[in-house]
Image 1 (spheres, rainbow, N blue to C red):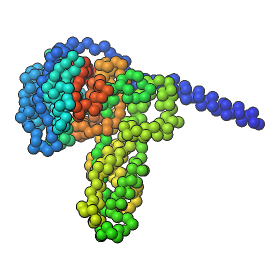
Image 2: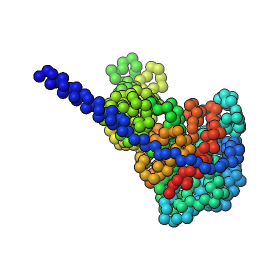
Image 3: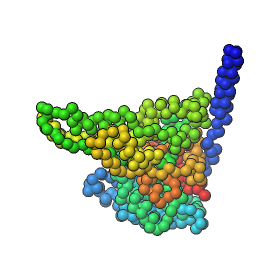
Image 4: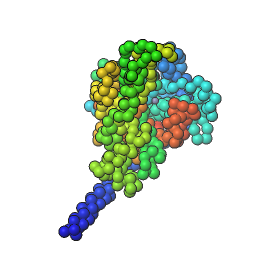
Length: 483
Ligand SMILES: [Zn+2]
């Protein structure tokens, strides 16, 4: 009898190992074979043009009164002078003065139009950090390996990359089958309400529904995904929403010599502590699951074994991902208490306490569902809860021609890179364009330095010359890949 049990246990174990290992070994790569690129590009011209673009100070300030629009005019004139073939062959519409729509007419009126988007405004250099820059922030300095300056990565690489690609293709006599719209917003860094949002309104008014829009987004980075030596490029198929939760409680303040056991400040504090303790529900489905489906087949055996058997290991994986802020943010809506208002005098209990919590919303959640969750977690009827902001964007497909074209163009440009979908935790203009496109993708086709993300809005923003040249090759390939 005992022997039988042991035999059964061993048999189950063998079947289990056999099943999970087979599943691991049969994992099929989701990466298309890279094709050889044949573009000959004038590399010096591209580098010099990016450098000139960086010198023009198209800075967005939160306070719009501070914005120097003469620089934006200058930038638009610079584009007209630098890309004569584009300006002869494409029509240009200025939206709200400073945002730009170029329309490149296709040969087949039945083909669905597409959009390539980027923005030409940049963030300011933080006061007091000007001298920390190795090269002056708006110098556009060209060195052996880099082009330096604010906007090189975010996002003049996109504007210049797309226009260089279009100029080159026109020169080669290329005619796209479908209409191509080049969409350049001028206020992405302060929300895009006057730029991308108005561009989208215009497209809606003209009844132009794009098959897809590709905007800035995830880049190609190394050492990001455990178990993968190759660089990984991530295409945002959705972006999180952003909302502000206000918790308010009012009531008798009284004198601080005889406080009640729970005060207004204590109430709000307790509510925040409960929210941080509990957190919103983690989601393993959607773009994050897809990310792992795309990268798992490329992992070393140990990692691959775990990620190809998520049916078994999902609880463990979830626990590990929730352990770090960066990976937790792609799993759940996040809670960030940012403002706390209460009290004015050291010896008077405040009549009112109020806190603001900045929440980044997963596509699986809604503002309404989060409000319900919050009320349930804090479980205190004396606290008034309001939620205001934007829902997450819709989630775009990874199985259509558009995603495949972007993935193929990325692989052709960076044959060693693994290209996968993901959810973007930062915002972009793409959330606006989603109102005029079936699908929106967020991808910056460049190989990023390891600390590139910090440099983007920080000090010493720069791009390697190689990445800039390859961005142009990427956009050319993408335009020719989209059927
Ligand atoms: Zn940007």
